[in-house]
Amino acid sequence: MPSLTRIQCWLSLFCVLPSLFPTNHLRSFAAVVRISSGAELVSGLASSSEGDVVELLSSATDYEATGATAEAAFAFPHPLSLTCEATDPCELSGSNSWGVLMLFTGTSSWSAVTNVIIKLGNRIAGGGAYCQETKVTFLNVHFIDNVSGTNYYGGGVYVRDGSTVIIEQCTFQHNSAPGSWGRGGAMYVDDGSIVEITASTFSGNEANTNENSGAGIWVHSGYVEVEGCKFENNVPNDLTRNGGTINIVGCSGGYFGSSGAALSVFGDMTGSLVSYDCSACAEGKTTAVGGKACTDCAPGK
Image 1 (cartoon, rainbow, N blue to C red):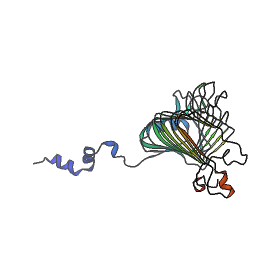
Image 2: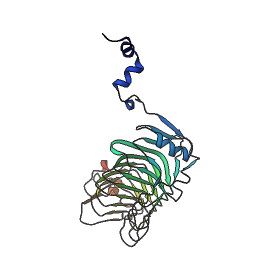
Image 3: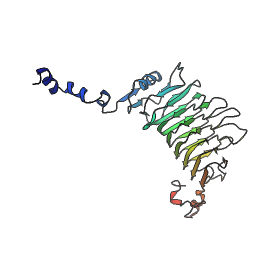
Image 4: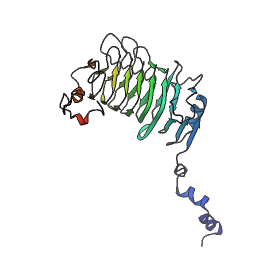
């Protein structure tokens, strides 16, 4: 016959639940972690749980990790969401001393970064964001004035180790990969990673000027789709495919830009490069150059 103590335990919610479920399953709802300074953001990320929403409160605050010594000012310890509560984007800064974001969270769950400016990052690779073996969506994120180390890769974003990255309505402006071997001023993609970019702008990015080094995007390995994007003033060129695949659909500044300038693309014979000229669609035709239906070109292009 059960003892009185055991009967009392069975009737007690606080006694039964720990024996039935691991403690991490008891936290069934994501927490909202509200942040008002760079120092709070460092500690808030470190103490967060998977799936939390980390919310920046003010677009007037320059969120920087003063005195940071790590490879990146703000590291995601697991998949979570980082967003700005304000209407205008909140600013995350590396102060020209360290990378801004590091995501190394595994590929089982998604992270999200929304409505922020990532600026003044300085890291050997991926000054703005370093994405390693991760899944993340960037929405309305502005990568500005980020830089990789001399002769390294991905001033704005470095994507590696089979990551999946979705980029939507973002801007890449004045990011650079300096030095004679610098590659991917705005973005460098490697290790079979998958990147999908839509409705975004690449402007004034720079890489090694001695050859076609992909000031906008350099793809070494993986798959990159770029749709409805604008490329302008990237030096020495917009996109370079050194391996893998780039699929370009209806990108302006070249294919249907008013200037009529050609989108500057360089690639060897590895992988494939598919591009469509949607400018004919504006002339009343139904098929873009390359066989793409105009209905599949970027809206309004």
